[in-house]
Amino acid sequence: MCGIVGYVGERNAAPILMKGLQKLEYRGYDSAGIAVHDGKKVNIYKAKGRLKVLEERHPSDKISGTLGIGHTRWATHGEPSELNSHPHVSGKIAVVHNGIIENYQRLKLWLEEKGYHFVSETDTEVAAHLVNHFYEGNLLQALQRAIALLEGSFALGVLSSDVPDTLVAVRKSSPLIVGIGQNENFIASDIPAILEHTRNVYLLDDGDMVVLKKNRIRMYNSLGERIEKPVFNVTWDADMAEKGGYAHFMVKEINETPKVLHDTLNPRIDKDGRFSLSEISKFSAMANTLKRLFIVGCGTAYNAAMLGKYYIEKMARIPVEVEYASEFRYRKPLIGKGDACIVISQSGETADTLAAMREAQRCGAMVVAITNVVGSSVSREADEVFYTWAGPEIAVASTKAYSAQLMALYIIGTELAFRVGGIDEDYYRELLTALTAIPKQAQTVLDNVARIQQLAAERFNAKNVFYIGRGMDCPLSMESALKLKEICYTHAEAFAAGELKHGPLALLENGSLVVALMTQESLLDKTISNMIECRTRNAYLVGIAMEGNIRAVETADDCILIPRTVECFAPMLAAIAAQLFAYYISTHKGVDVDKPRNLAKSVTVE
Ligand code: G6P
Image (tube, rainbow, N blue to C red; front, side, top):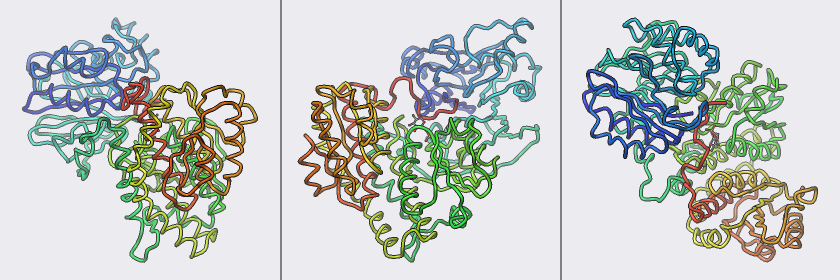
């Protein structure tokens, strides 16, 4: 993954690059570096570790120069080290890169034969040497010739020491935007990096190249032809990407859930009080002819998809297949004309999800994206887009975006179910009313945080945690366990409660923590039996159940209660409780909550 940023203008570049990189640290944070042109030459500053190490070692306010590029890294080729961190240099050329150059080994041999000496273990260094190799005074041409040889994904920012006023960049299968300023211009992997300086951006497409000077932006397509693009105006606020008084982004984002659910739901209710799916009208028109629905995603988005399957199959009786995007893309899936595929991606840039989407389209299926980022690759390539209006999500572990994905699936599922006659008008109305109450009920879960905090304080030392659930609680248990793995480094597993005795029960020992999701009351008896089986093996039982579920309270050693709603929507509220539980365990364990080890927010490599 990695984040890149670039600046050309009249101000000192280094502080702008550093602040931009801070906003991109969610993309990777094992090392960082910047290259700044001081008018005569390019100076390089690098450090292993977080950005603050770089800032401590090379204070940005002491670095002069009005042109620069910066990079925050998530290692793919070569361990995190100063040598492997970007920018990479070859002759006059300095390069930052996000993505993976797949044919770098072949190119490396070729370049070595030509006398180039490699100092790092990265794939990126190939790009630096190639641009240098083709450079004869015209940076754009050199970049064009270099990328013609590159296979894989790359967003590149390039400088040359003999051109003190120009920055060139290219985007192929890795995100890159251009920020338009007054006597200054920017490039960045993502909008928050430049939002402090401008709200006007160009969204580059695959293959696009850009040449930036302080008062000129020229864009070219992959054929080298000049192109114009509409200016995209960013409407959301910079402070939505700031912590706003919270200790961590993650807890801030969980606390934004009521608003996010409201913002995702309300624009989809029309003046007659019915769901409107106008954004995905072609897809909804297929409701009655749809042969099969596929839903693909990675990580948390996959877990949301699983919950969507339970709901859509139950209500609409349409067969739904859920798959990891990384599997779907290579599996030659049985998908084709007459089928539809929903891809779910918070960032809209996950490499596997993008590839799965392209595969579904190639096979003739209609593709709908549920994504959070306007202008992301997924949003631009899908046939139709249903946005989750969650605002920027910075913490690596997804919370509010997951909630918004569930809301999106519930809206789509309910409308589909009505159209195919799976539910009648009265039930449709009942479901719609229940969904409308959810944002307020989400606030109630947040207001009752003290109980969850206390439980986390008592149980944070648990070595093994097992989440169990039946029906729609089953996919929720997968997401709940994932949260614990991601931000607590605690071994956590999720099991369909009924599967326990087919193996997992052997793992239970004195003090194991079992969290039973108990929102599916039609299956309560069964879940309680499974909990008792765990108690017999000396496990400690925590339940998450709807208010008034006395048997849940009686069965569990401790029980977190959420407001009462229609059974199938209860996981949306229980999810918030599970997220908070993981968050507070993480803080007790002293884990870097927002940036857990080895992970990154946006996975734009395979
Ligand atoms: C990474 C993140 C996860 C996220 C997954 C899919 O692994 O750490 O939180 O669920 O990518 O991301 P997407 O942006 O496609 O939803």
